[in-house]
Length: 128
Image (tube, rainbow, N blue to C red; front, top):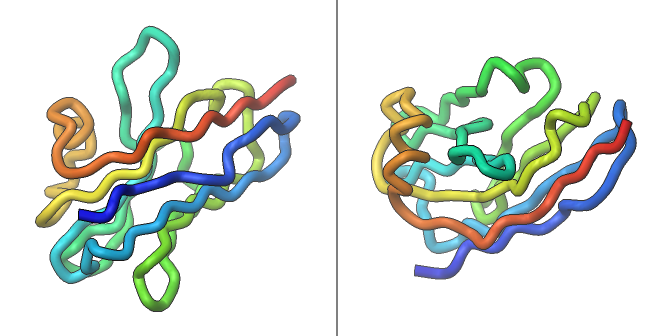
């Protein structure tokens, strides 16, 4: 499989925006669910948002609903995470992931088991 590679991380002030990108060519959207996860220092990796392979529906963590938007380009080759109204508590390493099959609306399981394929991560730092 083509390695996943995130980009777009960086430092921003609270209230600002960032857009993360991840190349997902090689992971057909009809077969692979794709998603964004994040990990705080000393904490378990957690789901942020995902697109389900079954129907293209999206799921979000409660903490980012209304602020973050997950999307793919029309050719399903690049996955995005548009982040707005960023807060200091959003500071984390963000990872792109792809796994075969639906999300089953269970991002915690996906994260806990590290299912599928993962990028190396990109750091997002939000200062107050």
